[in-house]
Image 1 (cartoon, rainbow, N blue to C red):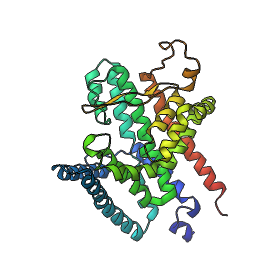
Image 2 (tube, rainbow, N blue to C red):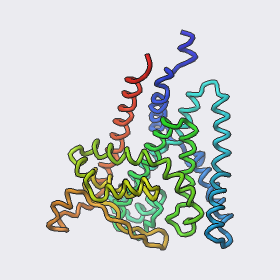
Image 3 (spheres, rainbow, N blue to C red):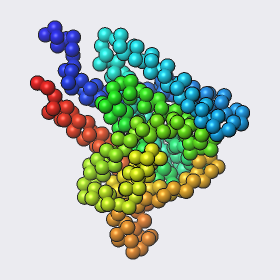
Length: 339
């Protein structure tokens, strides 16, 4: 009995039990942005960039500055958390609290839901302002269709980045590995290379983030389509953009193409297309499901553009995917755990 009290979680299944506990806490207890440690870290990243980018520098200087900034900001947090974790009497409790902070995603869904509800009631400007909080692109010029598509892509990509990848990082690399990824991801969001001023400054941060997301992206590209629409899996794997997305992901170029094609196949909708970041318009590949390509007779009839209902469907699919994947990992850990 004493050993059970001192070890409240079985050693070989401790990690997945911590994940379940953190998911439950995150669902019911949300962190206000005013006290969110990740918000504080983003603020520091913004201040760091504003100091460095005040004066014109060469691309090499910006690359070095961005690399040093990443080390200066991430390394101290990792050291502090590592020391606290090592000296903690109940490390499993520290892991739950840490993972709870790192997998915050429910607030994002709530904001997108509010934006979609505002769009449904004809409050288009309110929808634009709400969605702008979670989107890098400029929402002020978007139509209702554009807002729906932006909401879909934001939910799916953020789910992959903020929950799915964090959980896999925790299971594979431990709490410090998960923390390292999430901090790099947050820095990458602030120093996004899609914006001209951060193209060189955020280069290393983007590469490190891509390395962390490599395995989760490949798993997501198959598992999400299979769980949402099993019949579409074969056509998804044969799609002309699937191999292109795989090559880009493995080459650490960008995993967005693979994720957007996955979303297109899972919901049988169009994704991608041009976007406006501040005043810069970027042309992106337009992704359509294989069903549309094979039966393309009338472009208007078979456009399959996303709607508000598509956003609601995606939210339910995201929740289903997370639960199913967690159950599969739980079964694997219990099945192969030592007696």
